[in-house]
Every structure is written in structure tokens, then in C-alpha cells.
Image (cartoon, rainbow, N blue to C red; front, side, top):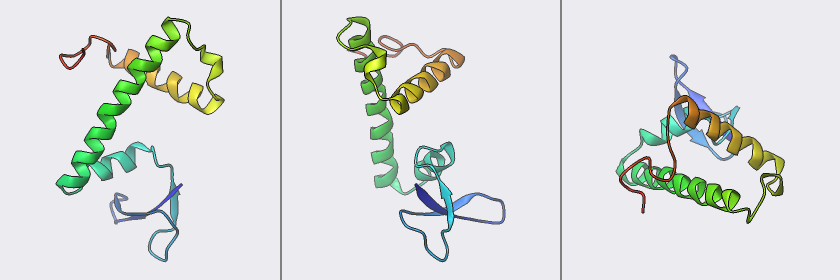
Length: 107
């Protein structure tokens, strides 16, 4: 859990790993608001975040291959991971994103 400080427009202006006098509202680390806030940071932080997001795509591709080849089954994953995988699959379907060949970065 992270802690936030918001401005008068209810936008996140500060994040903290621990509650402080300024940051008292809790928020999930994977919240879209947190990701948007982090993406709007100075270049080194933004580059690191972009790298993380690209790596998530790699992990998704690997997981899909392992599932397709029967090396692991979906139920081998913890329930929280199953929920996140299903959420990502739903988002990909809604946004017509194809893994393993959907872009020019695929090997």
C-alpha cells in the first residue's frame, strides 16, 4: 500500500511508502492513478517505469507460452495472480492488443 497527497483538483502530487502528516490516503501501488503519477516524473524515473511496463509485456508473453504448452496450468498460480492475469486479458481484448506478434518488438 502507498500513501498519497492530493491537490485541490484531487490529483496525486506526492507518494510515500509510509504514512506521513502530508500523505495519509492509502492507494494500491498498481492503481492507474499511481502509474500516471509515476509516468509524469523526471526522465530517469519515467525511463525506469517505461522499462518496467515493457518487461510486464515480456512476462505476459512468457506466461501465455507456458500455459499454452501445458507446462503450468492457470490454477497453479495464486488466486491474486489469477485475478491479475484475467484483468490483463480482459483489457487486451477490450483494446484489441495481441500478444506474441502484436508489434514489431516481438522476436
